[in-house]
Length: 196
Ligand code: VGL
Ligand code: ZN
Image (cartoon, rainbow, N blue to C red; front, side, top):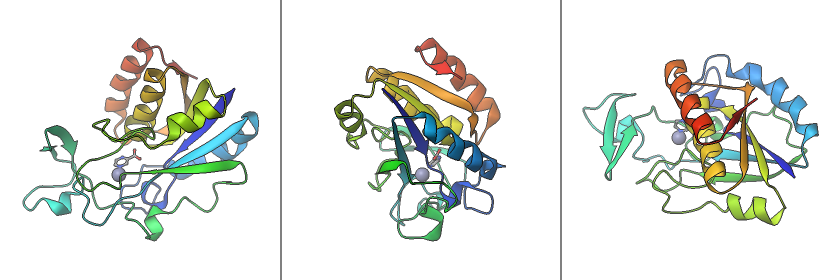
């Protein structure tokens, strides 16, 4: 059984948003057309408290996109984005959610970032997505959405490590940094992932 995971198609990652991925809105009709080919469709939602430590605003003197250390881990500092309850945190209204059975939120712990839909970046806490998919008999996940080089990549990689087949749908993802994504694709393939 195959599941489509729609990653973080929220206003803040789309043109006009706080951490916009260029032309991200072009993915909306593509993702809507894809859904009918899957037995199960779920989504993820980046859902940060206003004082999340991945925000550059929480580190006086540091700049957006600067790389720093957060509780022993490398951390890119982001503009404030996907703050709980704000418009920017909502999934875009044109994403068809008729088939979306569950939305897995992530990034609530202010002390740690959470790119994957399965775990925070330290693998300290699971979101429940793994158990949900296994309960539903899913052995293969196809991942689409934003951003290709962060939440899409880490979601797909965790799926592999959890014993599922994992596919990144190349026509339905876009990266924040294309060079970074090119490198990560090689790593993903080495780990047994598929680009389709
Ligand atoms: C994401 C950076 C920070 C993503 C989320 O959805 O790829 N990127 N938070
Ligand atoms: Zn985030």
